[in-house]
Image (cartoon, rainbow, N blue to C red; front, top):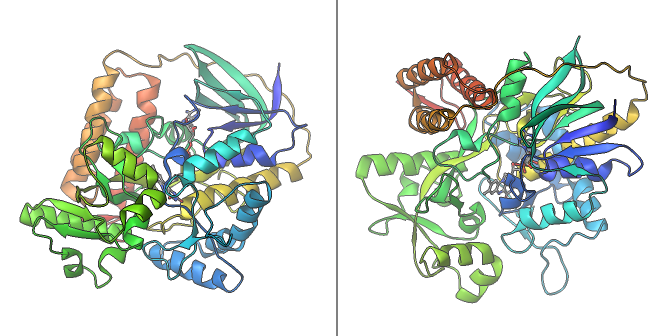
Length: 480
Ligand SMILES: Cc1cc2nc3c(=O)[nH]c(=O)nc-3n(C[C@H](O)[C@H](O)[C@H](O)COP(=O)(O)OP(=O)(O)OC[C@H]3O[C@@H](n4cnc5c(N)ncnc54)[C@H](O)[C@@H]3O)c2cc1C
């Protein structure tokens, strides 16, 4: 039986940063569902938040706690902020280049609900792509691509490895430790900004294994998304645009956000999302992002990807205003972990990045704290793993005999996306949530493959979480 020291599930920023911190001499395997660029990390635009210096730690903590609306785990937020400079310096010392001014000073920008400039970016609006590529280049370990994890090998509260579906064949791969870094849940929604691989598989698998998810009702929607293109994955127009002066207006050019919050465009993204949703419903007006405050030269240099993507859609930025809508963006809730990223209720299993619920985001994530969370908790998971020298016995597992997918599952998957968008998105009602629950349970009782079951179980947790939280808070809005 071949056994690894560590298996990492997922090759986004969290999985790859964990890999980079694990010594080359260790036997490590990264398992990745599809092509490496198909992860949310690749698409991250705005940047990475950090406490700029010691004095900024309490402020960064305070901003994070304020955004989280009283539901953050303060200890987790402290860990995030106190370690932020360390992980960023680590990247810089390894040769990563964040954007700098002409004198070579790091360029910090500001995003909604941050009380100061503290977000680093790279390649203008291509931070995720640059960091992801850098981590791939510095990854010293083998990667199994086009393979997805379909089971966790758990016995008597101990994790011994995973089952992978590798080109239609299932096989067990054993390891002393398993790190889940498989990202969020975007593909459960009809409109979202996420990579197509991000579909809540591992969250659903954890439910199947009796492991605890938490805060699943906390799903974040991004307010400024261009939804005019085909396909479920939509183009996000980064928060940094508003941070640097872009405005949101109705068809007559009125900046209506001030009707909802005195901070206008700089209110946190849930407030802006709800305001746009409400205004569109009430007035029927199209809503636009207006970027005329930028000069052409600055815009093209600072936001090159947005410029060229929107050009492909026929928009000439920053001159043209762009019709926008909110879309699903980020899963705050996830697999419950402790401060060392250990999954609650089972040994030798870790969860990091968007798939985890560390408690740092509470009821609402502060912009650009998620890439940071991926880095900080990947490091903590690795430190915990390297500190454990206990010898582990080998246990072999049978492969679960279950059909992975039926032909009809695709249609059901699309139905689920509609249910989630219409009944479990920005503004929820008890009636709508109960309908969604009934429909999801009905689908779960049909003849479905294991892969669809994962999605349905994850979606079910979101609905049950939302039903359980009767008062609106943070990103969770419930009306009667
Ligand atoms: C458009 C966009 C812009 C964003 N901008 C920012 C930003 O500016 N700043 C910020 O902080 N955050 C931003 N975010 C959020 C941030 O990018 C993500 O939260 C973060 O990248 C998640 O990293 P991750 O490593 O946890 O997951 P991901 O990067 O999503 O990687 C998950 C990996 O798991 C793999 N995987 C999934 N399921 C399986 C399976 N069953 N088996 C094997 N592999 C699997 C996937 O293929 C992928 O490789 C943005 C997100 C999006 C979508």
